[in-house]
Length: 78
Image (cartoon, rainbow, N blue to C red; front, side, top):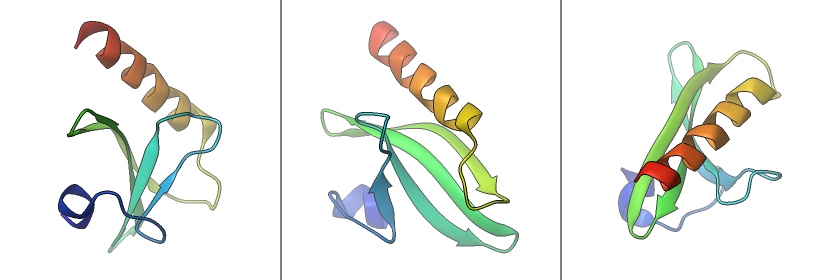
């Protein structure tokens, strides 16, 4: 809610993903760890692309690539 209604916002809640233009991640602490949701902004809409609970400090490349792929597909198909 803080990201949705307080956009733009920055760290520690939200940050851009370097190497993936236009992609952002929002962070949330949950019981089993830290959840991440990747998204981008299309006009004034927040498009959620992929979510995960991180087990390590580094975000797996496959998750970033999946979010990028979904962004491309959404932009293509609307």
